[in-house]
Image 1: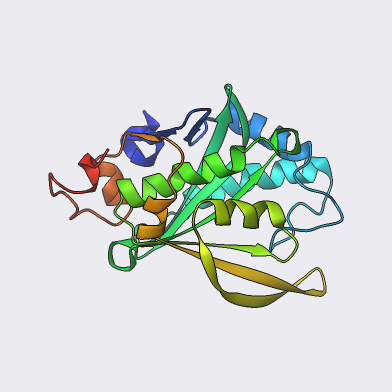
Image 2: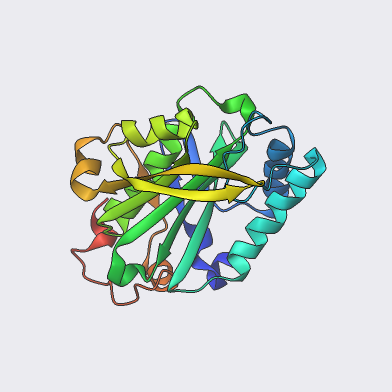
Length: 227
């Protein structure tokens, strides 16, 4: 099985309404369809790299290639988990979790997108809550970071609801324009104080920890047994 060679394929995160995991090829095709159907208002670009500024076919292909690329360039000290988000059995978007030298930094970052048809139902908060639980309760993170361009109230609202605090600003040039990017930071203490969703973690074992650069994290009282 593929998970014998890439143990991260064993990971499953479950919430009240969602399942987050890596997709098989057929599911990846359906995820690409969700992207092709639309992700955001074309008048507002929420991404630093404007990958959605193309045809529906181009968006779908970009998603399929990106998911393969992220896994293909995997490094234990610089990883991204492109969790596909499933709602009622259908892939509706991506909730990414990344870490650089995580065993030392204990810090993760997140990024996401969701098909337009599924927005406005609280699913964005629920899917980020899932990966935050994985990071803090499963892996022992101390910090999580995120960012949202000025005007992206949906993303900023998720951050606020989950307990993030402002962490400064940055400016980026996107599509030839200067854009203000708000940084967000969540501490373990603020995460614990703002937990609203029950999350189950499946498949987190020593092989997965090794892929995440945490081969030494084998304490029976450590991250593997917190949930």
